[in-house]
Image 1 (tube, one colour):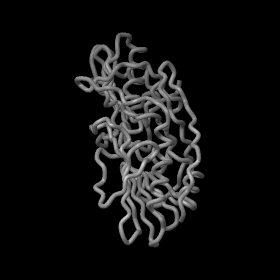
Image 2 (spheres, helix red, strand yellow):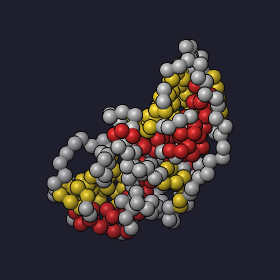
Image 3 (cartoon, one colour):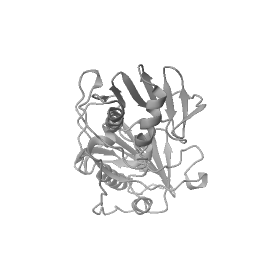
Image 4 (cartoon, helix red, strand yellow):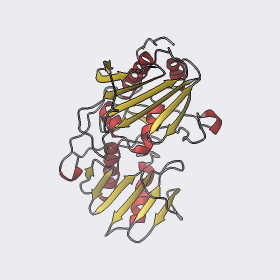
Length: 316
């Protein structure tokens, strides 16, 4: 398999209203069946917004594999990997299989420990590639942003590829994959916001992306959308935090995709929900662990959730 000549990637920009923040594009994944995936263990793809700028390094865990798998279109993956490609989300990453070729991508807080690595330029970002004997696998790191790693920021793209046949130029292939993915996800766009005391970030008015809202968005974009919706509902001033939280007039909305399994016996705005006196939890999608909770006092949490949820899901 020879090296693939990289063409100019076209980025389809979608501007969030009143913000100036760009999305690279929205993916259009068709519902995937078990037979269309490399294994029965992985998760099928769902349409997701593809962030731009440095925001790809601040994706929640449940969204990382979805975005990486769909950074390139199905046709582009087929071309780059040299054949029909199967895709699935595996853990926090993306797995792609094309014949005897097996490729894995993820974002991480640290680079993989490589031996005898060679320095490479990956779409303007420093990288390193390892291609050891017997030449049946290769690994690559790309340092995407200079911001330090945190619970929400993963500065490194890590890629691994293997092939059952020695002699395939996997070092060339893995560099091509890295350049394509980085060019597609880090189009011209915003830098990560500065984080102040208590994880506070500067407020911004950001309207939800159509048909997605906060679902599968980067952490700060979630926080800004929450504040925009809560301020519109409650008035006052929003206090966004980097980790998908916003507080307005004593009411806090918080996003997570690490929730322990729980029952959702109620409905809010058509979504499964759990309603108690001091907490409202809403399950955002049927095929992920993404959840939004409302806490606070002085106002009906159920009424607030009912009013703001459609906008936060990109329905209005």
